[in-house]
Every structure is written in structure tokens, then in C-alpha cells.
Length: 314
Length: 304
Image (spheres, rainbow over the protein chains, first blue to last red):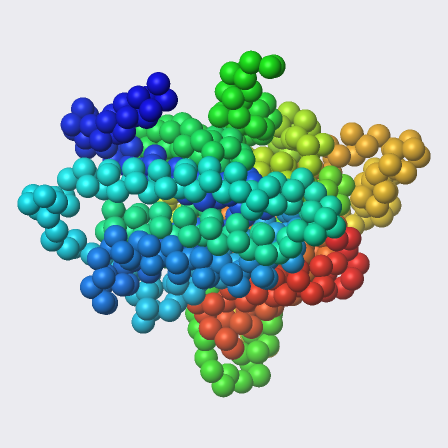
């Protein structure tokens, strides 16, 4: 039965571009999947390890710029560049982790915000590498064929499949991580960092590993973002608001859950993008409003709440 | 934050004494307003132990308040502070009473996330109502800067400086000499002992949040004629506030004043002697260094 539903789910995902060939809906689903990855990335650090970061745009931006620069300067195809973007983001995460993890709670959050702003300024002013505020633009993507059919990069279909794969990988990574020793370490750190330290957990190493995994996923998502939009500039990929959006998707969806970021992204991104279709600005108003509602009335998030309601031994 | 510079100063290497004094002066003028915003954040932190991410948006509301008072009612922006400070005081009280009161006991991180939500909500509401256009207030007396001793001082910034000193002095007097002010300080130092001594902590908390909001909003009114206005200006301002209060030690009013002036001067000198594009980054670098090596603030008066 479980296998059957799994196959049905896969077939459904594969068939989506044929069922709803409306570009806006495909765009919406792609955005939802991309934000699922970003929310999942944030959730690994902010949810499981309990380290609230307000600077995750750093890793998104690092991934996006790596992908773009590799393609523009060295001709590396963006789908490989995406993975390289993840690796670069994870490498950048190491020094950031060793600096910021000396601080705790809200102070850690503020320090990540400061680091993200410094990184944004560097991206804005290191013009030989990033072209500064002008941004980077790609006009064409490399020609490739899939079973003899050249891939049409003007349609949204190939991006949809890519987004499905990345989102699946992010959710799987979260699920696997939560079942390993590492996941248990992170939960221990979240609950009480001093006790975790006392029972012999190397909390710095565990937190830095969580941050690197988190940064890797955010970097891959950033690379995808760059390839999908084909244009990036520092304010588009390093903005504080992007960091904040990731936080909100994870929190509203459900912290420390495997599917929370997916639910959060479905909910918030759908609302936001639909709103953006009609009004040009202010679509993040829902993010703010639902964040307040979630913290006040269901701190476990939508998915956390559903799981509570569905569990039989309530 | 993009400041409109009446003096047209740019990074000039090997600039002389005059440039140094000039940038010190503009640093101190801007710093006085930073200090005002920082005091608001720091008294809220002192009493409530919360980091108010929406503080910068209160500054933004003040800026728009001044703008609309000028555009719609032809009131001088500096006079409009008489309307907006009491208005913001009430707004702050309402915000605390109806939005934050149930959240604050849930812990620092929850409150941080909640106020981040509030901040995004206010900024986007402002975007919807006022659009994302950059606006400026054009004052007839803002064209020519004053030139005492050959140093260019933009008149709006000079007025803002004077009024910021008045407001800060008024707040100081309130905190030191009135019963409510003493209760605020007592709650900040030791909330349980204050409660045992008969301080109505709940009332003091509302008053403090309202005061902090009023200070932020008032600083916004004073800043409005010297800066570009746009709805997400709070994002950068709130980040600067954190720099200021952490420099001075969280919870310390004198620390916030010193931190504000210091940040203003550092930014202003940095723009001249380091680089204009990185001027906003210098504050953040200092912020990280202070957080890491002197978490109680540069002056060792705050509580960490």
C-alpha cells in the first residue's frame, strides 16, 4: 500500500506539467519547491539545532553567484554550478560558524544578521568578481537534449523537474539527518546547550556541521534561483528580507519537522505570489501576519499542529 | 541608508584637518539621532529583555509621519514631532498591550521571531499604502548649509541635533527624577525586587515600550528631512540600532548615547578615510568584534 501510494505520488509529480500547463501555476510550484529547499535548509539549523539565523541569504547568494560566475566565466553548465554553489556556500559557512557560534540565542541571531550585511556589501563592491550593482545576466542556457529532444529552456517544464529533484533531496536530507546521531546531538543542543556539552557532545562541531549542511542546501537553491531567473544582483540574492522569508517559512510550516518547510512554503509562497500577481509590492505582509499568528497560537507550526491533531494517543 | 549630503563630501585621501573636523561634526550630528533610536531600543531591552526587531519600522513610521504632516497639512516636519511623539507613545502602548504582552514570557527567541514578523508586517503595509517610491521633504531653509568656522552644517540636521538633545535630556530627567522613571530603572535592574517593592511591573512595561516607540518615532521625524524615505528603511535602521546598543552595552542608556555618537562618527570618518561604499559595513565589523570580545559593551556598563 505504501509502495503504491509512493508510485502514485511520483507519477503525479511527473505529470504535473501536462495536467496544468499554465505558466503561472508552474511558476508557482517551482517557487514553492525552491522555498521548500530554503526553508528546509534553515530548519536544519534553526529548527533542529535551535540556532536562529537571520543571515541565510549569505548562502543563497553565495550559491547564486558561484553558479552564475562559473557559467559566465568558465562555461560550467549551471546544473553542475548549482552543486558547486552549494559547496562554496558550505565552505563560507565554516568561518562564519566558528565566529558566530561563540554567541548564543538572540546574540547569535544578531551576529548572523551583521555577517550577512557585511557579505552583501562585499558583493556590492567587489565589482571585478560580481559586477556590483549592475548584476549578472545570462541570456541563453547550454543546449542539451533529453532522449533526442532538445530541452526548451524557455518553458518552465525543465525547471519544474529540477526543482522537484532538489526539493526531494532537501526533504530526504532532513529526514535522514533527523534519524542519525547527528540529529540527536542537535536536538540535545537545542534543548540545553550546557547539558549537551556536559555529556560530551562537541557542540561547536555539531553546530558547524549543521550550519554547513544547511548552507549547502541554501547554496544549491541559490544556484537554481540564479539559473531560473537568469539575472541576479546583490540586492536580489543577499537581501535581509530573503533571510527573513526562510525563517518564516520554516516557523509557520513547523519547526523541527521534516515536512514543515514544504507546508510552510505551500502556504506562504502561494499566498505571496498570488498577491504579487495583483499588487506589485507588499506581498510579504502575509509572512509577517502569519508569523505573528503562528508564534502566538501555534508555535509548533501548521504541520506540527496537524501532526498533533492526527496522532491517536492525544 | 542613503543620506542626502548637502556638502557633497566624498572619500578624499590625504584630506586635511578641515575635512577631519567636518566629518567629525557631521558624524556627531547624525550620531545624536542614532543615539535617540538606540535609547529607545535599550530601555525596552532593559525592562523586557526582548530584542525588538520592529524598532526600525517605528522610526520609518515617524519619517512618514513627518512627510505627510508636511505634504498634507503644510506643517513643518520639526513641529510635527509635537503630534507624533504622543501619537507614537499611544501606538507603542497599544502594540505592547494587544500584540506583545502574551508573547514576551515565551522567551527571547520567540519574541525575536514575533517582532521580526511585526516588522515585516508594518513595512509591507507601508509599501502597500505609500508604495516603494523614494520620497524627500523639501524645506526652503535646507538649501544652503550654515558655515560656522568654515564647516558646512546642513540646517535640518542642526535643528534635528538640537531637538534630539532636548528629547534625550527630557528622558534623562524623567528617568532620574520622576517616580515612574525610577520604577523603570528599578525594573530594568531587578524586576522581581522591583515588584516586591510595590512597583506595578505590568504598567511599567507598557510605559517603557511606549516610551521606546515614541523615541524611535521621534527620531524618525527628526531624520526625515535629511534622508530619503522608503518603507523598508527600517530594515537597515534596526540593524544599526543593534550595533549602537551592543556597542554601549544592552540595557544601558548612557551606553546607547555613547554608542550612537560613536557609530555616527565612525561611519562619517569611515566614509572619508576608508571608503564610501563600505561605510555601512564598518559598524557591523565593530559590532561583531564587540559581541565576541566585550559582550557587555565597550564601556562595561551593560548587562549581557
